[in-house]
Length: 378
Image 1: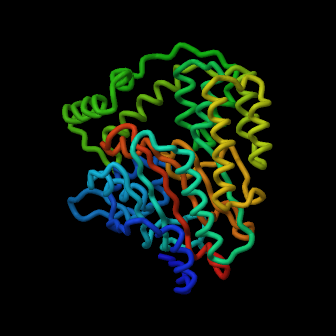
Image 2: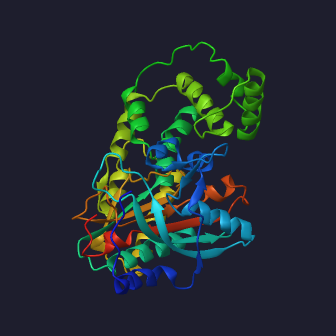
């Protein structure tokens, strides 16, 4: 396994300082449950994981990230709010890049708040701390790229789509291939679809109900699931496949508007103006989301992020599918977009998916010290 070089201790201390101030230090087991991570982060993450399994035991993986385990620890504490700093090794495979480190150090901060917290202030704080930690490494070629999953959702809601189609587009927010597939079939009339059997049986049920029913079918058929996928994940995939076959397509005008939205990449002010200029861009949700972004940008500038260092891209996303609001990356011009120095975002829905209380707020960031270090190249 290829490991990153160590960052000088004095540099690591500078990187650590903005994130660790006022936060409780936590750690997380290196072995993490494979099925849970795939359910939360998405099946596409499987190729990046190092999977391990003891004889007769459940499949696990080496820790690819800290967000999920830190969230679980916060929920187990029973606290309504908390700030947690972590520092440790993470492991991700790089099958397409023989020169990439697969064992590397991450430092990060996760912030959990009770319902009613001002998320704009929390977003600006975490993104600005990620920026400050990144620039502490000495690089002078950094830019803060901003995105927002919820802004995409608000735009989709303003297009007046059929509910099933709107829901599918939102689920594909961080998956460019699925979005492109929707754009490519624009104008196609929905055709009658034959019954899809098991998917039809599961459709319309809650995730828990669908998972229980699928387990009953397995038991009757004498089937043992393999590959680390749980019944809830498999059930949802079957349901979504059936929904995709039946859902109407985008109209040509809707597809053109959505395509314009997805192509926006500019300074934040120009990006917001471009969204407002798209035909069909309407609705109170979208107007509110754009107004929130103007306030969020003002807060970021106030927190010390140079206005000229910020860019916005409507397609900015992550390998993990649990982000549902602000997303951001600190990028180095020298390293390129596929090797970000820092990443982060809002994931309010994740605690609830882990059986936490509904309505809680969560946002966090992670910094790669070696990439932030001005002497680092990997």
